[in-house]
Image 1 (cartoon, rainbow, N blue to C red):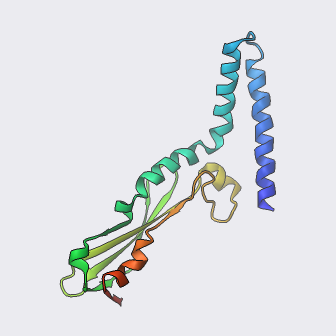
Image 2 (cartoon, rainbow, N blue to C red):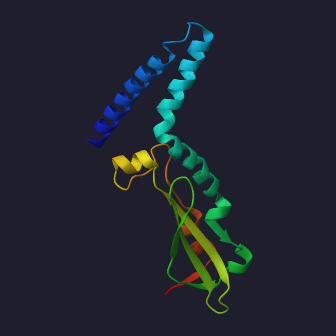
Image 3 (cartoon, rainbow, N blue to C red):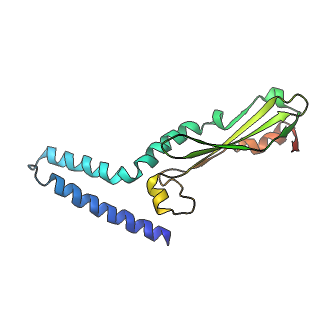
Length: 165
């Protein structure tokens, strides 16, 4: 049902932008300048409701790199016993809200941080939050979640013993 609602909104916005762009460029003489202005203005106005979502996507992808998701030194970590504390969460100050969930694993003997795992979760822009669907207001223009698949294989691969709390 929400998909049909989204299609109706996009179609209505398309026709509204088409009418508005036509009205703005109607006073211009025919020619290449009018066509170029129409195309530029139409594109700008049509994308305006999701512009923060698009920009936020670039910011999110810059954060969601392998070196930001999982930090460890395999040589230090191999065969160790590690323990963890509660995960921490904070929200980054970007154009869209991006939550970072961080979990750190410490050497059980020395207390040295050996593994840092970060998961990123983005909310959508103002349009997504206004409409509120699908649940949780995810971004409309990119996948708003990111974590390391390697993290879940790391403990077995390096023969690490975990002590949960």
